[in-house]
Image (cartoon, rainbow, N blue to C red; front, side):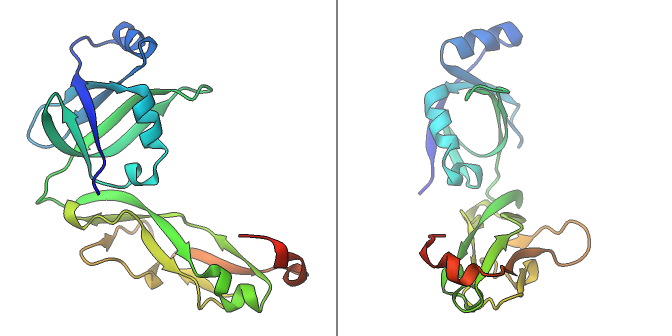
Length: 199
């Protein structure tokens, strides 16, 4: 289910204009990329604030309705006020259905509570990476990638190469090696203490 929201074109530019918009409960933003020119827009702050709290808003192709004209975009950057819960500016990039895009996708860890490492080994599962850099066509973009930890044994780790990527999705590798995604850390005395705690 695609997330859709509205925006209006913004003519007045500059710091003063942006300040006035923010005081009026609006957020200035920009849509760029593709064959069209960059488009300055404004959005409702409260609506945007709630959308930004959804994980899917950060890793999905979004539909932005600018005065009736819908555009497919991905979120590229958000500027927050240093100490207030206020969005100062937001950047979206247009996506082309026929062009591969590059985006960070969150990892969802499942099965750690039933893994031998936790049930028998009294381990604690440490997640060292919570998102992966991937590239794919917009239609293949997953909302998240599942990492199954149900077979993890005490002292073992899951590496990036062991994650099953959805069809059409490729990993964008940075640097050498095969990074660790999750590790079963042996915690002394944790088997008895950890029984009543929920993960």
